[in-house]
Image (cartoon, rainbow, N blue to C red; front, side):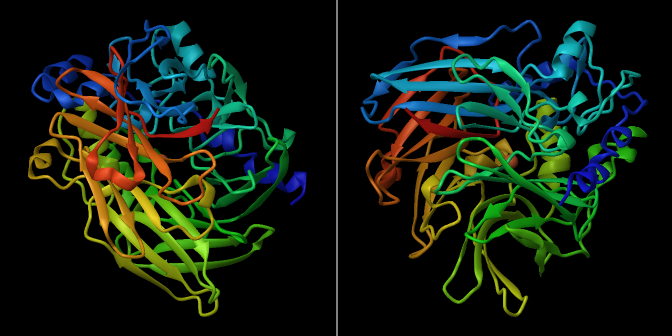
Length: 503
Ligand SMILES: [Fe+2]
């Protein structure tokens, strides 16, 4: 793809994303009233605009912190939801805050900083929200010079080639300094691709190459960044399902594998005063499409079709000996978590019960046919051994819910489960009724190669103590629970995703 083509592909971004002009202010105090009866939802309050960096030099550790577990554990998520008396009505809307936990010498420290996007800085100066968000229309005539004018950088954080990338779905990644999380600015990989979407779920393969996608209207862009953080190339192609919501992707040795759930985004309905439920449509008569692109030439592609499902996250994909592709992902029968759950929690109310579960698909590249096995679990935030991204993996880690008491807490998780995809055995741990469980990672032990020679690392919110903890479990003994926990003296907004960089 030449530079002119790229310009033509993304040149319309700024015009399309001009700020809408209808009002629907939310009530900030309504959240406070509702959450009094739903204390496990307290982190959805978010931080206030006057909050400075969150710092704790030494978290209180219980148990025995593994000596070999050294490095930087990052998380990102929406954190600032209220400004000038207005409150966002959708969880995805908040300005991003990156959390960094440093592990080393038997100590855990924490630093949390808002990503200093142009949006955050402009709204701080104005003392009010200026730009419409994914699920909240904001009346304003503030100028938008493209998607980075309202990019919240709130979805994922990964350290790659010496800098932290804070990522959103519709615009640039923002680079942060890993030493102090100061914002260096939006990453422009190539001059003619400024502000082109660089999605929040890049995959770093075993050799350190970073692969990512970006989608906009009928376009799909495939990014390739080398292990040194240098731009290799970007290819632009067409989506077989324009205007949909594309969140995550997988890589294999030769392919990019991209689920395209049948969800249409009608931003104009939101701008006209509609709710997220009215604006984002689940098209039950459409299939779940899986777009498979050759990494070296995305014009060579296949589109597989499966029964309609909502998909946010993939676990992994790899090429099998028979030429087919195995793909694990989490699917749901509809998009209620997007349009109802993520709205309810912002009101301090429980979300509808979780319906998403593990899906194991096989994509036959020879015949073009696909099949899927749906497992009977209730999970999200799937992760695998990071050294095996794009390669055969045996174990899949998820946040999970199974206890009866969880019904009253809507979609929030109380446990984790590590699934053996060979035997079907599940090893799980219930953190208990007072805990809200976030994404956990598989962190390989230094020098080890077996998938189970690993720690599981993740955060929980303790609703009783109103604090956030970092938990460490042994992958071989999940049911035994944490071998160590590090407690902050404060709670953090619930986040989406993160990654670990060994020291
Ligand atoms: Fe995600």
